[in-house]
Length: 287
Image 1: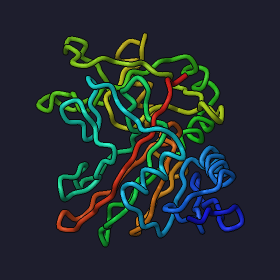
Image 2 (image 1 turned 120 degrees about the vertical axis):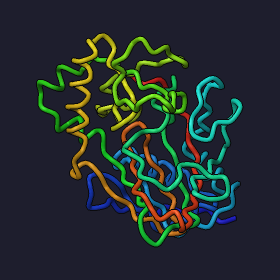
Image 3 (image 1 turned 30 degrees about the vertical axis):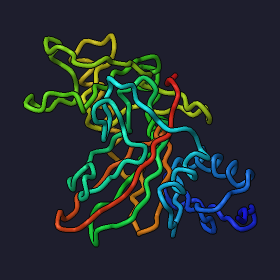
């Protein structure tokens, strides 16, 4: 089997706050070490990589993903998307058909697995069928979001810890909350505080490690003060200057750094099919 060389692959940054397009790479082939290293550096710099016109079997998709890390496996008592009876599929169908997950509605800006002890480092999402309209995915640059905070806020949040509560273990009959104000409600899962300002484990960049809508709590702050702070930070996140929106084409693979980005999906017509496959890679303890 031929091995791709550096001269055949081109990585072009998008005219956007993050992202780069990779041209000339066939992810079904063996890839030269210098290309893998260049892709890893591009991910550190640009946070998401877009590979066009791929045609992969499940085995080829996994083999390509494992160039960048090992599989994310959550603890058995901490469910994530597609967890069933303590097990999570290796390849998760992100689809509105054929037993897939995430449906057809809007998904607010979020990072995957924030509520686990070792959140995933990244994910690769591979498009097999896409709707004619809607279903776009946006990625938000959390380093840029941090860097554009005022100095007072940076100092205020520098050493704070944040608990993100597991959205797959919430009481579906209870009113939805973006901040845990009622401490009388018993916890039904372990919690894992992580730094609100995370240091990226490879680039060293500072990350505002907060999603847009999941229930959270700032450790050590009174509930009202914590809720007001998180509301202020989430208002700051809600700006197009931080994100890129991707219009999917069949054959696209997007590999994103889950440690440095949030992602969002627009709704789409339930009568149309949207079929993608996701592999998530293991991460480390946030610091």
